[in-house]
Length: 467
Image (tube, rainbow, N blue to C red; front, side):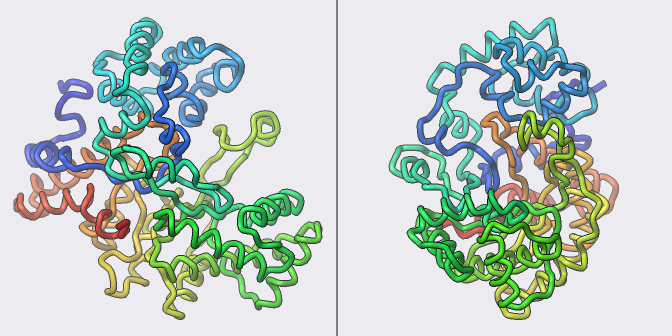
C-alpha cells in the first residue's frame, strides 16, 4: 500500500518518478493567470490567521461546506475566523475523492510542514502551527511566492484599475515579477444599462475621454490599453459564457451603443451583436501590441438567484454550461485570422465534452509564426483536478502537440494555491511515465526530460514575451 501524499504521490512508474524529481520539481513557476490581490503583494501582507489566507474568497471550499450541511454563518457569515476554520476542518474528511482533499493536505505539507490529516480532532493543532508561522517574515505574501519559486505572476485587472500597486511592487525589492492582465469584461457587459453606464463613467474618468459615442469608448479603451502595456501587461483575459460572432455592421454597433448609453435596455440579439463587435475590437488591439488573448468560456454563472441576491456573485453558485460554441468560435477566430490580426490565443474550456472540439479547433489557426500560437489552456475551474487535467492533456496530445503546451496556472485568489503546479507536474510526469512503461513512447530520458521542463516552464517563458 502506498503512503498518502508520499514522495511519489501520483507517480506510478520509475520513469514518472525520475521525470518529476529530476526535472519537473526543479523548475520555477510562471503563474500567468491568477486572481491574487496586487495590494496584498505590494503591502507584503502578513495574514492574521489560516482562515484569512485559506478560506476567504475560496468558493471551492464554500461549496463543499454547504454540501456538508454547514450553516452560511460559518462560510461567508459573521462567525469568528476560528469557527469558520473549525467547520472547514470538520468538512475535510467528507471531501475524500474531491480534489480539495489533495489540495488541502498538499498545502499544509508544502507551506507548514504538517504531514497529518486535517479533521475535527487535529483542527486546533493545525490552526496554532499555521498561525504562528504566518506571523513571520517568511510567510508574507511575497515570502510565500518566493518559497514556491514563483518567478512571475500575472494578476487580473479591469481597464479602470489604477495599477498603483503594480507600480509599487515594481519599485520595491519584491523578488517575484508581478504584471497586470487586461480583463475588459465590464466594457462589453451591456445586459444592464444602468450598471453599464456607471462603468463607462468610471472609464471616462480614468481615461480622460468623455464617452458619448462608440468612437469615444474605443478611444478611452485604447488609452487604457496603452497604459497597461506601459505597465508590462502582455495578456488579456475574457470570461465569456460562449464565443460571440454575430454578423453586424459598424452602424449596428453605433446604434446599439447609443441606445444603451441613453439608458435603454437591449434585446438579447442586440446584446450578442454588441458583444461580438467588442470581442473583435479587443482582438485587434491585442494583436497590434503582440499580446496573448485568453478566453475562459463555458460557465453558467449565478445559478442560485436567491443566494445571489443575498451573497453576491463569485460565492460558489456557478456550474458548467452545455452550449455548443464550435461554430461561433470558428467564426470569431476566422475573422481575425483572415485579416491577419489574430493574436496568440489561449482557449480554456470548462465543459469536458468540448475538449476534442477545442483541441481540433486550435489546429485550424496555427500558422507557423509561433510554436503553439493557438493554445488549448490547462484544465480550468471544475476541471483543474486529476481527471480534468489528464483529459485535457490527452485531447491535446491526440489532436495537437502536447510538447508545445504552455502548462499550468493557479487561477486562484490564494497565496497557498501554488502546490497546484506540483499537482499538475506530477500528473504530467505520470502520463508520460505510463506511456514509456507500456511501450507507447520510447525511453529517451533526454527527450522526455526536455519536454517536461518545457511544459512546466520554458514554453511559457518563450511564448508570452514578458521582457
